[in-house]
Length: 304
Length: 296
Image 1 (cartoon, rainbow over the protein chains, first blue to last red):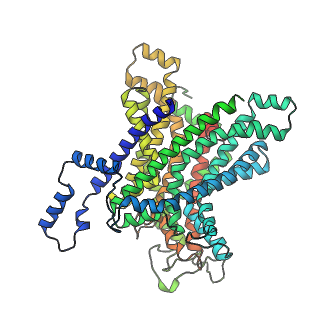
Image 2: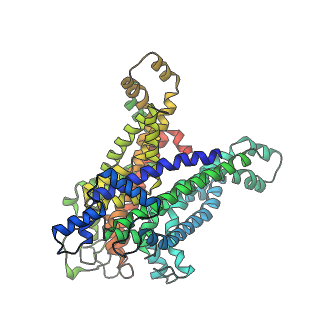
Image 3: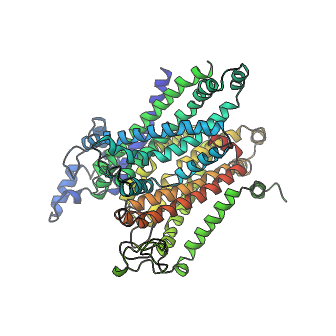
């Protein structure tokens, strides 16, 4: 219960500031009127529409109206599609979320064994290689990785398709592209976290009790080093979604990222706002889940 | 040596903690900077000159290539090497100035928030930081770029004004811990002025971790800039950017791989060099960060 109360206390002000940022940007960007009217519209038409849209109201009043609409889930209509903006975003959200979750899955599958191995065989040749590759993985821009993967695995070796999201095989290149940087970051962190756990007393105790190394690593080291990893996954989530925006462009992925770029190009601010808001909301929820999982993991494992 | 001067102490620490990788990074970075500064006098060809008869010439080691165009030409016949050298200018400018802006804001607000820890100012600032960190940086930058006209100044301002929260959070944490130290507490009870306390006792202790994170910040700013240029929302043609070159090459990847490959390499090498320098500084100045960030 205390956790719930604390979460609400954190979310509400965050959301409030978020709405201010998003609304403020659009307020500054302004002039939806000339977007909506035909070229030959008269000054009276303009004035009428401005009045109807409430654009002559003071900033504060406009903001309050905006919040009122938000609470009812009304982000306004898309200028491009003449559909509710939120609905458009929701239609494309699953594609982006699937891509992000697949990337995260790939990152976890790669980084956990590599990170643990590198820590156990600290300063060995393979540790050096693993550490080096993970620094490299963070330095490469993800869209470039995508283009290089297309070059190697779609052009030179025609194994994977380069665009679309119809079949499972379409997922391979985009999710690997998006997952590389995260895998690199996580490998680094897991290595460090395992090294820290290895030095702790209970591991030494378990070893001195004559437990098999395999059991020691699995039960004591692995589970304990997972705790910081959970936090990292949570922290990295917004950056992962941010990366998805670019990766979707490379692979013509039918997700929110492409919708965003398209809407930006068309100055379709209702959709842009809806996207920023939805993604921020997802991030906040992801952080809460991370926090909760952390709380569940921590006492149980530590005091086992 | 005057060991009371925090700057001198810092330089000494960096000197004493030599790192081969860090040196390599520094040398590579210096070369990239020099190439960018002296680009107009170094480039073998005019990087803007379009020549339809010289389209899509491959690098010299590939069949059909020539040593006149060492790294080949792009889809309108411009020399890739010359464009790469010019492209570094935008990336370095944006990286450097964006970090100066975000670092200054972040440092100031972090000092304020940490010094006034627990007060309403601190709470409000931290909620703002939370809100901005909840939005992916790239998303925030994308939206802001639309509001203002895309261009070099916009890019620097937008990246600078959106990426300060991480510095604020770091500096605040450091200030909070420094404040607990005995000599600071003592100075406080003795009635030392706020300015003196902040500038003499707190700032020097915060600066080293700040420098480490700011160095890495240059690399992130460069990556953000190149992503935006790749998406066509960064510095606009005819100005040359690595991200823009990559975008040009994307459509020719099946036939002319070199157009998109080399700018990506340039970005990667630049970011790697900065990372090496950053890691070196971290090991020398702030060994605590090392364990925190996963290296031991």
